[in-house]
Image 1 (cartoon, helix red, strand yellow):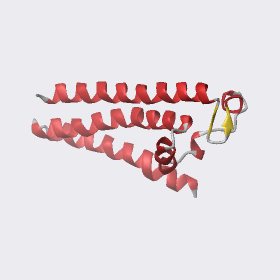
Image 2 (cartoon, rainbow, N blue to C red):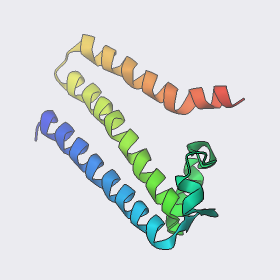
Image 3 (cartoon, rainbow, N blue to C red):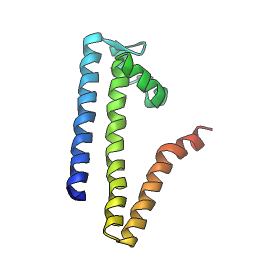
Image 4 (spheres, rainbow, N blue to C red):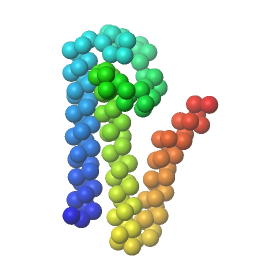
Length: 127
């Protein structure tokens, strides 16, 4: 298997898994009519107070274990965001295996910027 197949499969699998979680969470939300102490009308309201800042990753994982619909949906979104990040990481390996130093460095810088924006910047802004 070459890197193009690996990257293509990673993108397909990431989208399929994230879609499955989002669909499952949506179905659970409509069946149960509530999630995480919010009613369906509170969640769907244009003035809803529900936002992603109330759902840190540790709570999402715990909520998925309890089958909380919003946590299942947010896990699907987290997987969807992680999918292109994995593609960039695989790109680093691909360019390194081709001994293309310029694109290895450029892709590594892109990966660093993504990690900085996802993990470090929210900590700096949150203070």
